[in-house]
Length: 105
Image (cartoon, rainbow, N blue to C red):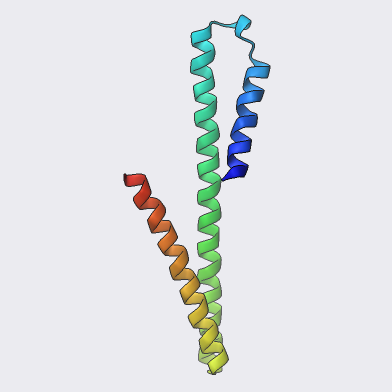
């Protein structure tokens, strides 16, 4: 996303501001900056993964609560709520599968 791109740009700018080429060789600076970028990308990926997992857990928790409510007092309203949450969860899971398939390419 645009936020992650801005964050990674800031990381690169900060790296070169903190590590002047005259302090080390160009090759060492290049290798170190690649490690910094790799770390920033890993951090961004881990953050995204945590958010996606939390979203999945929240949707599953909402589904369980809605199903329990529907079992205790069945009605069209509670059934519709359960169906909506199921549909949302399915869309979310399909998006996760799509991302995983894109990684395979």
